[in-house]
Length: 238
Image 1 (cartoon, rainbow, N blue to C red):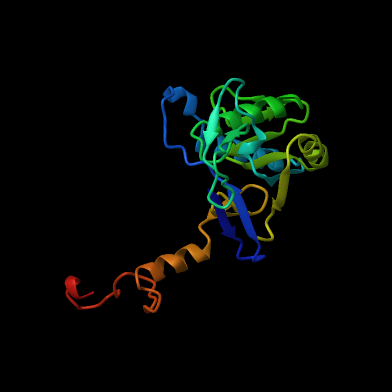
Image 2: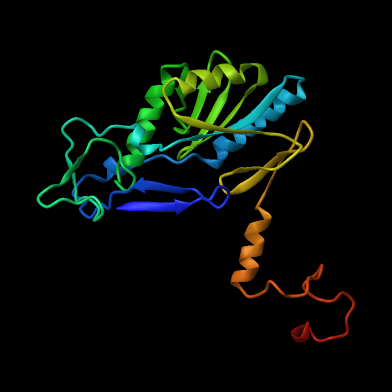
């Protein structure tokens, strides 16, 4: 089917063809996909901050792989038959997929294998203990990949070189650098540097507003503590 999504910021509608896999019939390992660990992410941040403390001009910047999964192709001999969506269906015709479409259970794994092979041609080494953490030996850069979101720590002087080599084969929308001047969105949270030795991560304010609205508490009176300090009221009345 076609999955439509309207972006609130631009009011543009993004259409994505999504497969609805109804039959499994394959080994579980065929659908396994690694997930970036928080330990690897903390290691990346710690090394970046440590280098900044030593006077080196290191930075963090973001990247988003556009239409990530269809970058990868299905293995040779793998036949995936699709029933076209109603808007494109023709009597007596079916579709056969050649790319790792969204909705196929093995697409995340195929994309990760394709990404590892692609960036590997440009000097990135995939870590064995954390498969979604990559190290660039030439520049010392470190990259963490979460689904299709990239977080890269490197020297500022190497930024354009790294972006150029990745752009040669991967369509990436490069996001802003994480700085101490404004908040940057990554993995649903907001990130900002605090000096040269700290990184602050918080939930966006919209999250708390939506949570209060969901629980019908948006109009409640805000207080600094759950109960009145020094009050003589019983605990069950606070």
